[in-house]
Length: 146
Image (cartoon, rainbow, N blue to C red):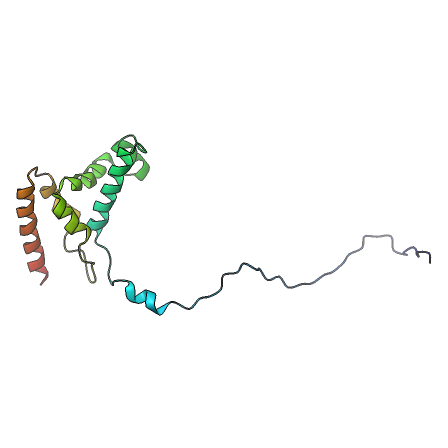
């Protein structure tokens, strides 16, 4: 059999249709009912986050990953004064820091104690005085909340 030459001389076209289904599509999972029971309601207080951040920043500088706190300010797009305010929280007595790190979550309204309230306490070099001021602040803030 000899091939028969086509009578057409123009461009030819082919039309193909298919259905595309990606193989790596994420399957919809039903939420795990047990997982939601483990999450505490409310938000972590901002002061707790700031102390954790200060601890992290101190580690970065100590390990040499950052030269100094000025580098940290440049990376975070904040002023050096703001970094100083955050890092001054590390001057608090260790037991106060621990209490603030594990402060109860805020379920309703604003945080009871904010970072600005802690600044005068953090500049006191004596931990016993800090503890007294901290106790007074807690009484004042918690009594006003009730």
